[in-house]
Length: 289
Image 1 (cartoon, rainbow, N blue to C red):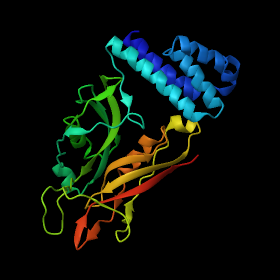
Image 2 (image 1 turned 180 degrees about the vertical axis):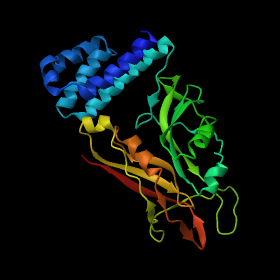
Image 3 (image 1 turned 135 degrees about the horizontal axis):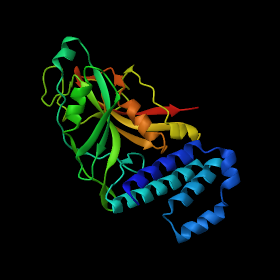
């Protein structure tokens, strides 16, 4: 398979799932048993996997449809690796976000500082097989800060992601905050970031949320009628910013959208003995049609 035909196959995969009318599926799809029999002979046949996913989606078996689609994407990925043009895999419940190993802080542009422009720029990152950032694009822009965010992110490095033992590129979102208010040295009225966060419990109350950003409902999840509540554990730093969100209860097609939203929430700082501290707590993100 050539790189061009591979890219075309990926587009066909998404188009088949999202846009093919159900009436057409009913007329043209083979029986489930026939498809399963074919997969016993050719377990990586993408067309057969897509047909099976359509049947599951039509029957409301969304978890099974999601699993089959993941198998189809893995098969395409293997073909891409053989062709030497690996396709990035999106981080989700089964593919964990890689750990950042090298960080370059974003430079606060003087024109933005003078204008009092601040906030969070959301960036979509593609990390190559070696963990180097190979592509970055803005998902949530702030005009005077976008370029500074991209300049920083493009220098970051991550641990390689392995798929079936093979390093492979991954795609995920990250955030760049302006101004960066983190600190590594304790000063009056603050605590060093090395101090372990305190879990919200008993005498430590959940902080009051100051900023709420609603999640963006993924089109694939909407088309598949997937809804529900994603449960996430977050760390809120001494300044009230969300760091290190981690999915506790997953809904595969919704996890990334939930994480993207939660990373932009802010809270009132938690003060313990007169000093702001980091806290760990659980939040929920609801998706409903």
